Structure formats: structure tokens, C-alpha cells
Amino acid sequence: MRKKTLDKARRIVVKVGSSILASVEKGLHYDAFSQLTKEISELKRQGYEIVLVSSGAIAAGMEKLGYKTRPKSITQKQATAAVGQSRLMHIYENYFSRYQQMVAQLLLTHDDLSHRRRFLNARNTLLALLELGIIPIINENDTVVVDEIKVGDNDNLSALITNLIEADLLIILTDIEGICDKDPRSHSNAKCISLIEDIDVDMEGVMGETKSQMSVGGMASKIQAARKASRFGIPTVVACGTKKEILRQVLKGKEIGTLILPKIRTLSSRKHWIAFNLKTKGDVIVDEGAKKAIVQKGKSLLPSGVLEVRGSFDRGDSVSCIGPRGKEFARGLVNYSFQELDKIKGHRTNEIEKVLGYKYSDEIIHRDDLVVL
Image (tube, rainbow, N blue to C red):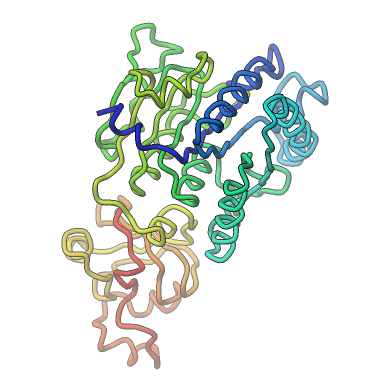
């Protein structure tokens, strides 16, 4: 199954984390840069299209500035990233030039991917670079990003990029063997899970947050990223990036790391964008009947099924649909603001105009704008 799944991959997103590229004790790992760029260049010559999502800007800045510990304040982190990003790209350009391979830098924020027009512009730019034979190197723009426009970590960014360019495979390189049943740093008997067939089984409790001082994303973020890719029909491999020729071994179908299979029923590009690229602005609490109608029958959300409204959102914003037990089960684009929805919740559709004095739509969220998670 592994070989059959991976044989089809030609367009690949490779994500490499700070824990591979640097450490507090040794600074930047130049051997890791050398190995990674050599492998990617060889794959490129074999006809693969590669997009690299690379962490390491703050780590590179720390080395340049002589810092021994990761900065804690936002302004210090952003200043360090500003110093480090140019250093990071200089290193990549230097190593890739050994193989006559041209690279390009893209710095993105969640804001770039949550606006549909900018999402499509980013997609067109990436596809143009691939057409030219250039390897795009992507990082979150740590120099300007704030919580409101932050993706959060490069694991999740890599999953969004996988969707953006409709890649065939996501490979996440980390400093442990793969996704394990326990944290291998604290459990010597931890075993690597070779295959995950259904990512929606609660995998996030398997390992918890294993991360180093040099990294942001723990193992839970890698599972989240794989889940996002899975919903778009794309497999993910989480593997140890310190192993030699790791990318070649993965693509040959060797039993290495963890393979997460994609969902059979996948989301359209637009629905994937709604579910994973947009940040939700509020919660809509619904009753059991409304939840069943949405999940089991694919129906729209009507005002009669709404119990409570939380947060501040406008018409057209993304909101979370929460069931009566408090668990999010869907996301969608809402047709009414939070003030309007608070007034019409529990009412029938034919009462909306009477309550508000006007009516935009019969549905609070139309099924075409609604994604079951």
C-alpha cells in the first residue's frame, strides 16, 4: 500500500523544521542544509516538482546575533527573524547553487491565504515558479506577523501550501522517527506508528506536545497538518530528517516514518479553504436536530436550530458550528452578523423579515458554504 500510494507523487511539499536545521548548543546545522539541498536537487533532476517550507529564520538570527536562548517578546522574535531570514536564504542559495538550482523566497501570513484573491495570486506565483524550474522556499513572515494573521507554525503552513498548489504528497521532516505511540524523548519503549489510515481517530492525544526550544510546532501540529492534507485527498509522511537520503527512501516506498493516508471523500478546493484557511470569528451553538441535519443529510443551517451566539462576526465571516455537547463539528460562512443572528435564533425562516425588518437569506449558513469537520 505504501509504495502504491507514494509512486504517484510528482509534486511534493517538503517541510523541514528548526529542530533539524539548528540547536541551541550547536547553532545552525550546516550538514543538514547540505544534505537537504543535495537530496532536493537530485529529486528535481529526476522530474519531481518540489516546494520547500523551511523554518529556521529565528534560529539563524539567534546565531547571527549571538543569542543563546530563544527570544521571548514578540518584538525581539520579529527583530531576530528579520536578521535571520536573509541569512537563511543566503545559506539555501549557497548550497543549491552547487547544483545549479535556482530558488525563490516567499514569506506568507495567514492573511495571505484567508483572502480568496490573494490565495489565488499566491497559487499562480508558485505554479509559475515551478513551471520555470525554480524551487520556492516558503516561511511564515515572522517579521510582521501578529496573532490575528498568524498561521501558527510551519507544519500547518505546509498543509495549506499543499492544498494551494494541489500537491501529490506532503513530507514533514522532524527530529524523531515519525508519529509514535508515546513521546520517545521520555519513553524508551515508544514505537513509531507506520501507518495511520484514519486521521480523524483522535491522534492528537498520542504524543502530546513534544518540541524543542528551537521549534514552535510539536507533534500535535504535525497531526493537524496531516489531517488538513488528508481532507484534500493528499497523503502525508512524517519522518526523521536527520537520516541520509530520507526523501529518496520515502519516495521509494520504504517502511520509514509514518504514512497518513488521505480521506476517500475529499473536499473541494473552496471548501478546504473555508475549513482550514479562514480563521473563525465566532461560534454558533446549535441543537441536536440541526447538527444531525447538517452532518447526516448535508442540509443548511437554519435559524430555528440555533441556540446561542458567541463572538463578534459580520456577514460573510467564518464561524464554528458547535453541537450541544460543546464540540465543533462544522465551519461555514455566515449570512448574518452576530447581532442579527442573536435576534433571529430559534425563529423559523418565514419570521426573519418580521424580526429584522429585512432578510438576506433563509439560511444562516448555506450548505454550499458549510463544511463538516
